[in-house]
Amino acid sequence: MSSNDPAIILDRGYRNYEGPRTGRRGAMRAIVKEGYRRVLGLRRKAKGKLFPWTLIALALGSAVVMVAIEWVSSTLPVSLDTSDLFPRYAGYFDFISNVALLFAAFAGPQLLVPDRTHGVLNVYFSRPMGVRDYLVAKGATFAAVILSFWLVPQLVLHLGYAALSPAGFLSYLGKTTDILWKVPAAALVYFALHASLAFLAASFAKRVGTAAASFIAVLLGLNLVAVLFQEASSAPGARWTSLLALEQHPRYVRDWIFDLDSSAVIPAQAGFDPQASLLVVIGLAVISVLLVSWRYRRLT
Amino acid sequence: MSDAPTGPLRADASIIETRDLHKHFGDVRALAGVDLTVPPGVTGLVGANGAGKTTLIRLLLGLTVPTSGHVAVFGTPVAKDAADLRARIGYMPEGNCLPRDQTAADFVAYAAELAGIPSTEARRRASETLFLVGLHEERFRYLGDFSTGMQQRVKLAQSIVHDPKLVLLDEPASGLDPAGRDQMLEIINRFREFGLNVLFSSHLLDDIEQTCDWVVMLDGGRLLRSAPLEPPSDGTAVSVEVFGDPLPLVTALTAKGVDVTHAGRVVTAASPSEDVFITVRDALAASGSSVRAMGADLRSLEDVFVAATKESNG
Image 1 (cartoon, rainbow over the protein chains, first blue to last red):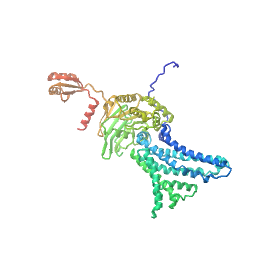
Image 2: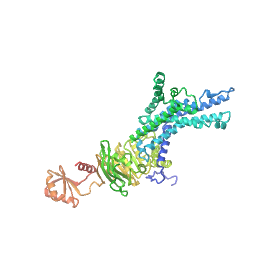
Image 3: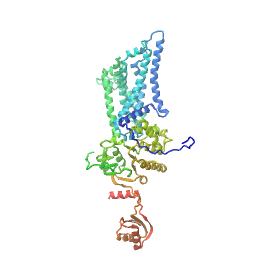
Image 4: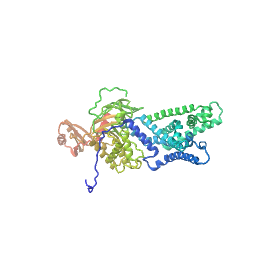
């Protein structure tokens, strides 16, 4: 066909597929990839990107600002230890805890609610996968998203501090190898708590907003109840209400991991060990897995 | 499934086979003792709302478990490996199944990946399939901006994008205007040339007549009929509408040994063994009846369905 020939549209018909099929694992990979895109608003309209990327910018921006302050202080004529003024690795968890809470409240429901309300579950379960595969893939997506949210800024902090260290980049990295397990371990505890509650809320709510609001209300409301009981009640059983301060448990475990003072944490004030907080988080995760699985088996 | 099979399930000739299939939801009987064999091709699944069509489709996909009885697709019992079977089955649900915030191309490619097609090939096939259903130009538009007809076509595209061997279509023309319905039926008719086997559920009998070569009729969870979709008339029956009393004609036809039924002034005579037109002509002459209208007995699928329902209800 020469370049002067008119263009024609051909009916290409239907092509059979004889190539390889990736099976359940391929389907689960597809769910993780698509879930990541959904939470971050990728391949979506601009309004779908606004909220998650604002929170990501806040988290990353904080890390960049901390590194910048470290750099400025290193150029001052007087020696200034910024670790007393600004949080480092452990403190960074507190510094962005509210931003992270909002991100988890948004991401968890985004992964589950639209599939249910738009009827997409009909498509998932007509493919070679089951409820368990679906939920495992969604859980893996949530883990990837949340851990990225916590760990990427921490990586920026770590590399920034290493670059500015008077001892030298490699020397700093060599001296702080414990960070490589402590930060991910603490992030995992935060993820376990947030994912448990966010998925539970998302499994029953009909709207993303309702699920996100329920998640935040439960966390903050129970925290308030625990504080009130701690301050007002002197009954022997009141101590146990401190365990209702769910939002405090990851913080207590993180302090344990980083070997920090935890006197301000409510379960510590009530005399519980950090292991008790870890057990609460694990218990919540198990209950969440059971309830979410039950809910989805009923749905299908 | 509690009952053991009473014999081997045939794997050669049938796409779908069920045996004494029961499904109850509490006290509600959705399917009751359905014995069914569906050959390759395009098959219509007919029944009123609540007849058990969607339940049968969900049983074929292994999404729900029979109360008792057996169901096999491609000769493989669904209970044995439903997930493996689903890789070879496409499903277009009756209700909504489209995320509003994805483009048609992204969603159909995603549906292909969920069925195990690698990512690059999935995108290529999504584009081709959307072309096939007439949405190539609109493939990068968001599904939330699509009309009902376009959404139905995307649902159809996701059901065939992974090259299934059997496609289950649950009320595919539901909610479409007449033009959209015709387009949908035209696409489904083309499935035959692509070598796709189709089970097409509908309560619109006209749609089934236009597209299918086999029909399965359900009513209240019972199987009424599973048979080839015959042409409207096979030339063995004649309907005559007479002026006045039809009984002399009925008597004359009965005397000639043909099967006679009458409703009002319309008399239907059927005889597979002889030329029924000549018999009717002779009977008319003998009885002296005056003819108002006469022709081959044109039984529509609706007539067949109504007759089968009456027969089933005794």
